[in-house]
Picture 1 (cartoon, rainbow, N blue to C red):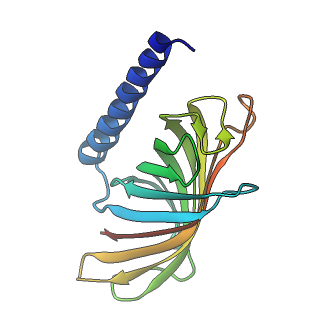
Picture 2 (picture 1 turned 180 degrees about the horizontal axis):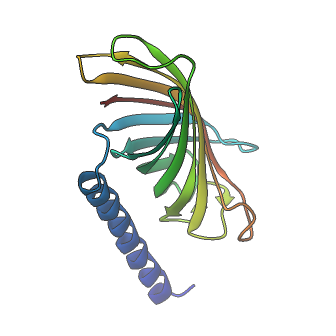
Length: 194
């Protein structure tokens, strides 16, 4: 790849990252978002590799779409993350994604009680670099999947702490070649929700 092509790709990556962040922040502040942000970090050994990945994540306020019953909710939540691979090359990646999420509480949630839940999220993502560590995703577009267990704990009469622990997997589902996924086997997130 020539320097000109590499420079254009780098500029395009910065533009896409900026557009993704602006859309995520803009939508989360204008489209009847549920108040609350979630911040987190992840770390762990990359699958079938000798190095580890780390990441910092920000979940923007999302939207509740459907309350299927008192214990089951579906919604959308945008995310931004900065990844670092503890490898010799291709050590940084910015990833933005929009998750469709399903949250199932073990007991009917209330503002006065602790509410444990299972959260599954899945959605399209955009990566600033398709090469990361020793992995190659084949495209800048991919799919992000997270599986979390969490608990909401009352903080005030309206606000609740949200603490979740899970794993994050980013792959292209075979839509591009190669498909060497990026993984974070341990992700801890903490936030406040209404």
